[in-house]
Image (spheres, rainbow, N blue to C red):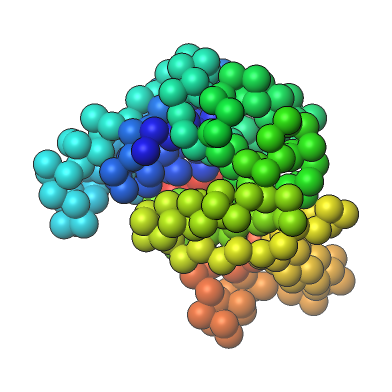
Length: 245
Ligand SMILES: NC(=O)c1ccc[n+]([C@@H]2O[C@H](COP(=O)([O-])OP(=O)(O)OC[C@H]3O[C@@H](n4cnc5c(N)ncnc54)[C@H](O)[C@@H]3O)[C@@H](O)[C@H]2O)c1
């Protein structure tokens, strides 16, 4: 399948890598040249990139080279969109920006192209309503780092075409993810995972504000108690600035 990824930041670059690794032809586009250069470096020699995947025996050299060949990074938004059967939008979490991008996607993409957003929480209704194809608009919410996390929260409404839901679920499963389809709530931010996470983070913030424990202590306690890979504050840092070595 030909897939366009809009935005080559922390998420877009990793998502583009996963999709290419799963056999899709991917065109990842960004308005910023430096973001594209960084994305290319990340998918080749970064912590979760192809080189390390080969070194660790997760991919063989031929698979890594073929995946890289299927992956294009460029500022050419029109080509990325015009050629695609599925678009995954990964621009920053600003509703006005996402609506602007969705209007452009709707204008440039083929009529049957599926438009998916990796928003962290804006209602599907707000993005679908900005297009003339609400039945073909869906949320496909990934977790960071996309190469590692099996999370695939797929948000749909009564307006979403059942074939679109099935197609996205299939593609996510084909990428080794564990797709869970949930309902859109037009008035709430965060779908399921981030609503529950935000409630926990608010309490963690109160614990620190009350002087009960430091950020580091809260992080460590949650890791030790629940077996989480990192604590709540470290999770926010990783999600916003990437997962360093
Ligand atoms: N970081 C995470 O852990 C995480 C997890 C799940 C979902 N998300 C969501 O994914 C989306 C992207 O987040 P991110 O962390 O990758 O952001 P980021 O800031 O790392 O990357 C966003 C990229 O979009 C580019 N961009 C901005 N406007 C654009 C446009 N009009 N066309 C093309 N590219 C454009 C920017 O130049 C930037 O490179 C957000 O909606 C975020 O909430 C993030």
